[in-house]
Length: 171
Image 1: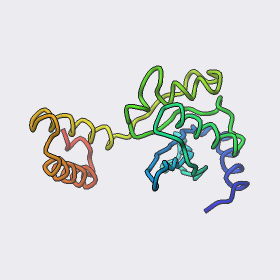
Image 2: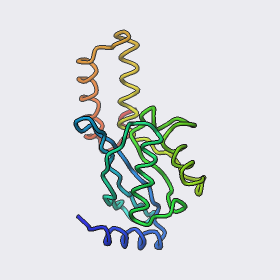
Image 3: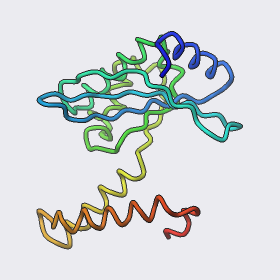
Image 4: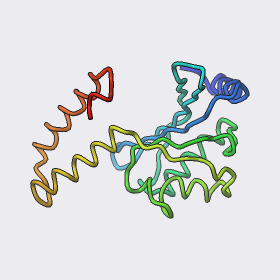
């Protein structure tokens, strides 16, 4: 794992070479707190493999878009990353993240004085499919849904998705 100075150098070098910078974050419960993990994904049209660098892990107060945006802002300040250089935010597509007024991207833009209005939100495809599948199953099995059936179908779908070499086979 790179130390903080090495991470800063990687990011600066990649950005000067024309790489796209996408911040990724996820949170997970830890006892009575939420831990937010923030990473930097660096993409280049010429490179076959993106570079992913760990930026920060910190406690956040809640899953709200504002708290997640503050965690992202804290991570980029630690590594001297200008909000203007960020091309996107990649997250798991939770309702607190996708709101156009209270979502993470909206609050991040607000906290950074909209210094980069072109930042796009990129939802994790597996999370999106999982949420969609859950909604479909709730419609089929009732308000609460059959959680056992949901988990079985989700597992089968994820295994099929990960095994497909050609994602068009899933259509």
